[in-house]
Amino acid sequence: MGLRINDTVPNFTAETDHGTITFHDWIGDSWAILFSHPKDFTPVCTTEFGAVAQLSEEWAKRGTKVIGVSVDGVEDHKKWKGDIETVAGTPAGFPIIADEGLAVSKAFDMLPAEAYLPDGRTPNDSATVRSVFIIGPDKQLKLSMTYPMTVGRNFAEVLRALDGLQMSAKGVATPANWEVGQDVIVPGAMSTEDAEAKFGEVEIVLPYLRKVKAPA
Image (cartoon, rainbow, N blue to C red):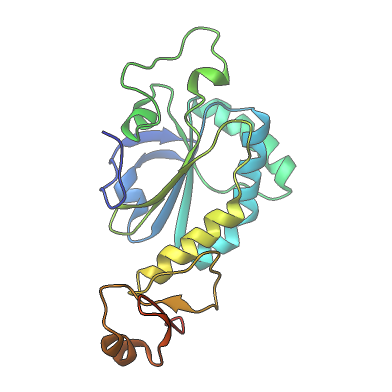
């Protein structure tokens, strides 16, 4: 059974280019983003890791740790980091999990239980290891998205989604294309009176679509 929203994410112990981690302990009280890749030294993934590195200050502002996972070993990860930093023009300070045995990829349902890496493998053998998982401090899955190998992920959207999740944790919802600073939506289960008491003035667009200023 695949991971669903609000499921507790798998805990695991794994080697990374920063040493051994136990995932839940590594998350601690932070938000976390795990982003996966089918192989080191691949072109699209290199640009994606670079994009993550360039956003290091943004992740920190949001109390969020980021970690990669790729089905290659620690030494390859360390060598690949040099290429990533060349492309990004900035240090890549986040760890990358070495998932040579596919345990993490299988635990997060990116590969079937019977999957294995053949001799002379190519990225196509692990092509589905191309997901982003946003995880809350409660260790529950808040959002996931999966891309094919040929389409680079939009990390501005990952950042926007993280902002939306952190805003919704304050008891509201966010509309389409929402960005920080814009109005938010009153949850359907909350009465207008309760919304006014909690958030202030309520704009009633439709009986079921009500907006308020974003809470601080």
